[in-house]
Length: 420
Image (cartoon, rainbow, N blue to C red):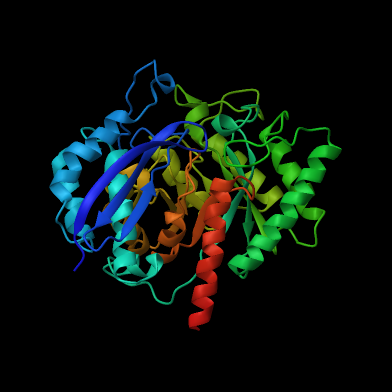
């Protein structure tokens, strides 16, 4: 038995230079584990609440000293002495202490920092790899261990980039026949080719928040064209070895029930924008479409999935925000064929696991994803393998906080291959 001896939180900086919470859980047997919490830039309205100080004299109001104090003086005293492997009990205790639907009292960042560190400490104390340790909390174990395929974010616009394009992310999507290692090799080759294409077109090769290039071009179609040119410059075949994907983050260009994008002179209805997605999908072999419509455009989502869901993954992020109630609505309305899962959108490991199980039982694809404001914590790599996710989103193939996740996934792949 390994009981919690001490919980200590501190303020650190994330990949954007903004404060976030890092928490260490120390056990009575002197085992310790540390976890840190990421933050989003493009944040859905229904995400759990992130506790910030709002003191303009520190980090423009983005400090987390209040969250640190919440961990150290409110949550820690209630959890010290609890058995670290009782993840359900620990998370439930924190949820009940908060007492709100969206962690508005104690903050999802405060709660999640402990929840993640507890899971890590539990895995260490039982001498179990974290990805295997997490599986035990699933009601239904999902067959053999597999490594999810990466969705590479190689081009960025919207809030993640220069905002000259409307869509937020443009992805390279490996074919399902590829292994993770093969996908990484492919991604590296295409990223290098893309950099050369950018230079040949006189475009800047500076990168956005998640490591993707952020070109100043006239339209979203132009970005997809750059990506297509890069793939053609390699030995990989677009539409066979590799496909493209879009995270439109359409909340950012949705006003008065209309969508406004650079590609079209007039505002678009949900149906018009969906038709444009279909056009782009055919031209550029798009396999993945995330947040194609706004978070409350339920009728539009249902129609979009009905019309395009057989040919590509229609994924909800801002639509669902890892929220079990939003997910249930999406299932009932048949609004998506895939769901994005981000632990900081809900606030505890156990709640996040529950969302994954509901999604799997409904036949939805699961994509475990990072945030724009990341840390070097690689928890989500283990989580993605543990829950048998179909895909993972860690960003581009540059920036240390992104590479930390890819490298951890390579370690897990080696471990799993050694067990075969």
